[in-house]
Image (cartoon, rainbow, N blue to C red; front, side, top):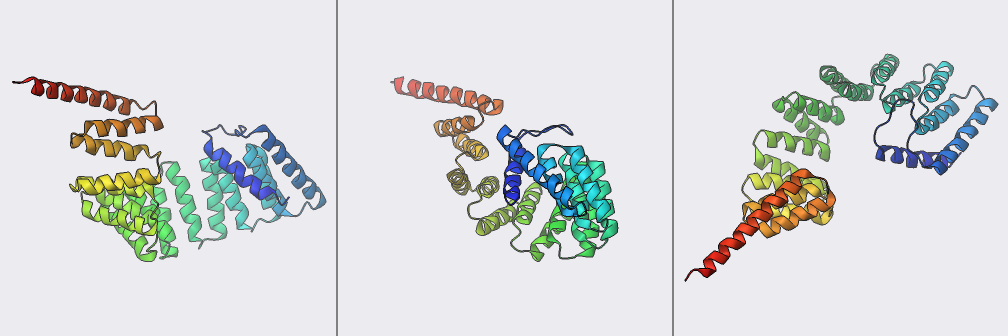
Length: 320
């Protein structure tokens, strides 16, 4: 039993690494781990027979069933747990996330509705329901849930960040920036808020402020390669070519497989007519994404430019 949670985390990781699945389908888990999961499931089944009124064992068996891809069995276990302890709101959380795991979003919403009926002042529940609504493309409903969460807890920086991102999708950049800024006031080390605000400010062509936000992320998380890449983009637009190149190179140093940093570096190198350098950067990017047609086309274009450059040099040398 004690090994279960470690095993669960491993298998959840395995699942995330896999592509999508249909409801009720078996997850792509190696056969030996399926056997171990089955052993865990059998252990919980025995525990349930020994004490059928302990709802915790139903929850734990439901988790195993979820990992194994047994949708209906997982929900059945959680329904039994709810029948034993209907006021235990944590079970509704588990049931909501199980439905969400199998992409049964309307059912997940129903669970959060029940949960909110039990604990109407739980601001976190509104944010979680908002995330499901977003996946259902109900952006208005998601914004309303985030606003309710903020009404219940004005210091919920997560709700401000999420509502800001939703506003950004609505193209309400001003409102989005206000929410991200409020999240930063509440939690000055919320890197997600800085990142989202940086993107939004970037979209409004206020690049110097975007640079400041990405620089703040790097102050908080100095090994964030994505932040260096975005910092490079903002500096490039501001005309700070040297600073942009340094930022892209730092992103690559931290993550040698950062395809976008190679592409962005190549773009600057090409603008500087350093075609050989740009070609080297794009070849690195192509190693990371060998089937990327855009990179392949850019490489062909650069090869032609290098050939033309060499021909021009040859003609110049031949002149008397």
